[in-house]
Length: 151
Ligand code: 4NP
Image (cartoon, rainbow, N blue to C red; front, top):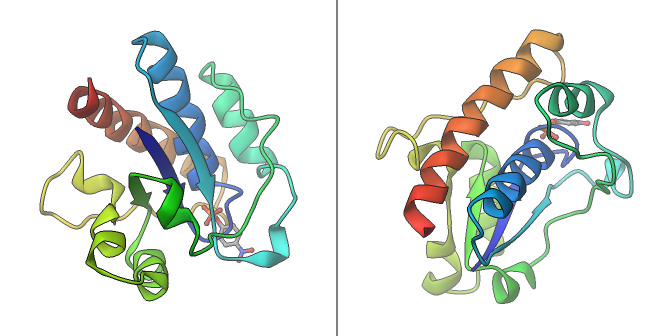
């Protein structure tokens, strides 16, 4: 099972989701791979946002080696499931899909926690530190739901 987390910048939400799920996969001895990507090429090659890195570290998740990258069409060939943070980025992923098989791989990550509700993980980039803590807890619960599903 290969999972890709997707947000806009690939420096806040999706690196957190990747780090959180990686830790849970290890803990539960699950055979799965996790990565993340975004759509803003401006941040490509950069580490995660300092606030995201600090928040993760505060809760025992290490994302210090993260390098941001842009989502590409070839990701549909590599990943089985693509968990997206909000509607805009889901639209961007869907736009690159070549067929229904591609399209059906992608969905909102919070639908794993709140099925059918189409809730989004709010972008914490322009806010303060608390936004990152809130996003961390939300993603932590969503990743628990993903673990239950793939276990
Ligand atoms: P992310 O947050 O999508 O959670 O990584 C953002 C980071 C950077 C930008 C937007 C969102 N940006 O436009 O630079």
